[in-house]
Length: 112
Length: 116
Image (cartoon, rainbow over all chains, first blue to last red):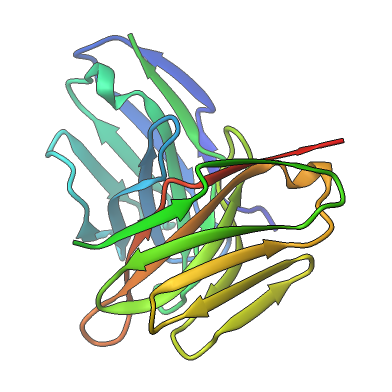
């Protein structure tokens, strides 16, 4: 049983570009949450998707958007990249009714 | 303001020794308190989850405590191993209206280094 997978592992972009990160949830999970973790900081909640709808959102600008597909996989899109967007982006999956989230290995985004 | 504060920021101990990490939280409405272990460059892995009615929970050599009155939690690691070197993150979960779990509020973590 595969756990949460994310792609790509690493990514380098320049300021102003756009990026798409991908996440496949643990088998059977219906809810996907995205987090941004800057170096030396704890993860910050970006948003959560359930039934292809954004269910909750953290304090992130509209440049951050997402999508969930019928197979529960999800994408995180970031437009007009800033240097400050450099971080580890974590995806976590769960059942909506469960307390437990399982995290993927993350995507390391570097913006130059 | 919902927040989670952890101490110490970093800790170095010798292999085989015990240690205790601290967490103070202000999370309201409160659902549960978790501890995660995060290896460098990897996603966090859950160690324990406790609701307000639980005051201790163990997972192998890891034992977490929760004092809901003082809003404090601790993670005790017994007989440390080199593989325990990681960041340990305390997380408070909000309670949504209707009883479902809401957002997670993460601390900045304690970076533990276990030396031989």
